[in-house]
Amino acid sequence: MSAHGPRARPVQRRWWVVAAYAAVSGTNQMLWLTFAPLTTEAAAHYGVSVDAIGWLSELFPLLYVVLALPAGLALDRWLRPSLALGVGLNAVGAVVRVLSPVYAGVLVGQILIAVAQPLLLAAVTRVVEASVPAAQRPRAIGIASAGLFAGMLVALVLGPVFGSERLDALLLVQAGLTVVAAAAMMLALARPIWPAGTGAAAPGVERGGRLRSVLADPVIRSLVLVAGLGFGVFVAVTTWLQALLAPAGISADLAGIMLLVMVLAGILAGVLLPEPVIRSGRAVPMLLVVVAVTSGAGLVLAVLPGPVSGLLAATAYGLALLGALPVILSLVETHAGAAEATATGLVWLGGNLGGIVVSLLVQATLGRPPVAFGLMTAVMLLGIPVLVALRRRLSTSAPAETVP
Image 1 (tube, rainbow, N blue to C red):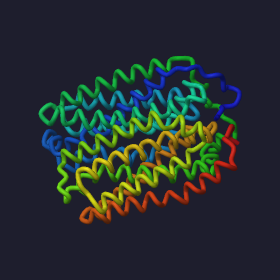
Image 2 (cartoon, helix red, strand yellow):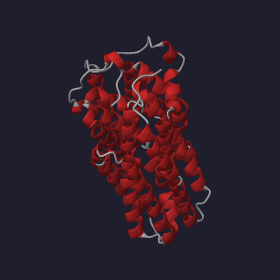
Image 3 (cartoon, rainbow, N blue to C red):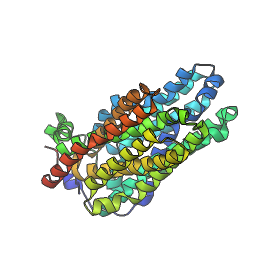
Image 4 (tube, helix red, strand yellow):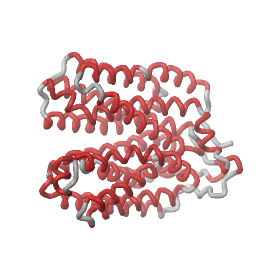
């Protein structure tokens, strides 16, 4: 269990705080993917190109790569104000999108939401630590992670439900959900449960000790690599599944159903898996199973693409890849010590970089679906030596308690 020196104190059960955080981080994911199901319709609505609408989503991973580490460092030193800033930017960005009738205003709103994203996502382990006892933190991280995936699911469902004819109403509904979630999280931040700010940090920390301690930790480095591989494949699947299965006669509607099934399976796995996996000390064996399951799913789609195999593979991808995230974050919470948010931000950074790289590699092979699915399988198999090394490191390393 991680601690934070003399200011650490017993934590009571405050599941409503975890729920508020899950809601606000989920709305961030919802706002990110608002235009993904309506790309061509939104382009016509605002009188811009399809590429311009694509940038409303694509700027998120790009800004995350730039802001992940600064956001993590800020959260570790000034948790409440940094998290409040992320909550506020997220809500303001959603409202700006409603108030602006033109593309430029929507772009500004998306930029604000994208800046909020690393401040929100990197805070998950710190929020959980302040809210529930140590034994229940894996479950809490799973619930918080499920909130992220639920936000994605809401975006994928609401877009087609409202359609291009009611795009303004869609933005208004999403802004309403975001403001309500933000109010709940601000109420949580007003409670006296949060660790004191560390603006007057120790000299080693002032010189970047937190970041150095994270980068020097072989366990955290292994977790970053695992996240990069797994989320690289997840992002590639969500981005290109329909295009890769189209030659097998899979329609856009059926591919959309497969993606919904994938996310629903991930929500279920994220809630149910982390606690028993972490409690039993079987995190690495579980992650090795993730490699096996996703590799098998990729090979099935490479050899026998079709409606049934596609649904089964999508379910496998969701259960395995999304179920792995809270397990990885639970290991971060256990081993990162006072640099939790920095380490969490680094894991998210690895995931975003992996998503960019693997998606681009798969894009280059879209004309050859078996090669694309084989490539994703090869990426997952790269995780085996990383996980073997991680298992050895976990058996010989102690959780971090302080930052030198």
